[in-house]
Image 1 (tube, rainbow, N blue to C red):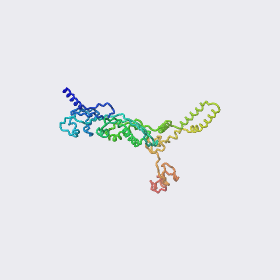
Image 2: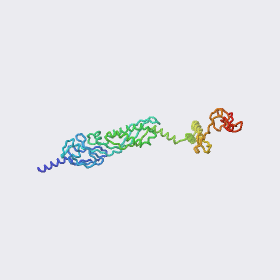
Image 3: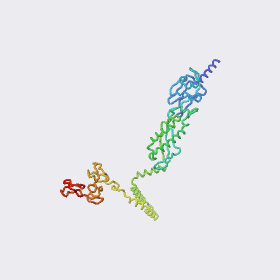
Image 4: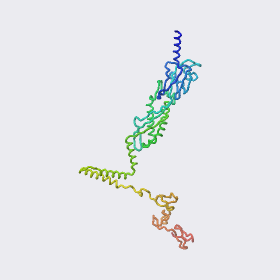
Length: 385
């Protein structure tokens, strides 16, 4: 009996020594898990199994010690230098020890929701002050486990994404509100800039997330909605663009009104009076609608002329022909009387009315000279202009 009792006591103490430390994640939203060491001691030479997307951190009396990355680790003083120094272990220390072990989940936490609980006020160049609402998703991961453990986690038994969700949403909304205002993108064009705004928002949030040891891996804007009155104004503007020629649309409405009156089957004097009243009221509308004629092509199209060199049809105001490159405007010459600039082929001056002489004949030899010549080019006699 004494032997059995002694063996039972030895087995009891043996069971208190932890030989395998590991964490199998059963909850996708768990960020930190504290291994349940409780009052048990870790056996020197125990196995530490750190799986992919995990980091194990040993904490001694509230002070962060050694960090272990994915892999199979056998615990000795050689691979626990910080803990060995904190506990002042001697070389070859082989006794069980106590320490807290935290497993940090470093995988991405995807499909995290964000949305505006209150509308974002922003100034738009088309509609003035508007209220903008939006929603989307984002993803993040623990990039710096030590920073995360020190800044957020503390000494809790576990930590879920819900614990930090509200704070991260407020950070995102604050950053996006600032981003939308800085972008100065018109409300009508926001939909075509979702990808650009999402990427700029992710970059803007990275500095804020890194303060907690996080990395924001993605951020997406799914929808940005405008107030009802702004959407109605946008619908009206779209309808105006679809209608096109308003004069034709008014004529169409007047014709529809005439048809409705003609189909009115209300009888008696009351019906006749109503029809007469409606007809009188409609008269003014019809008069304005049918009197508005569409603009003719001659009034909307710019006048054309023929190029004097190649006869191509060009704009009347053109200075050079786009086909042959020749100048369209007549060359300028000074008036022989007042010296004002006139066209070279003008017969009279538009300023003084003087007749423009094309040549001067020498009174002695009869040779033809230019109108500006002072002496004859043949005999040298003086010319009177």
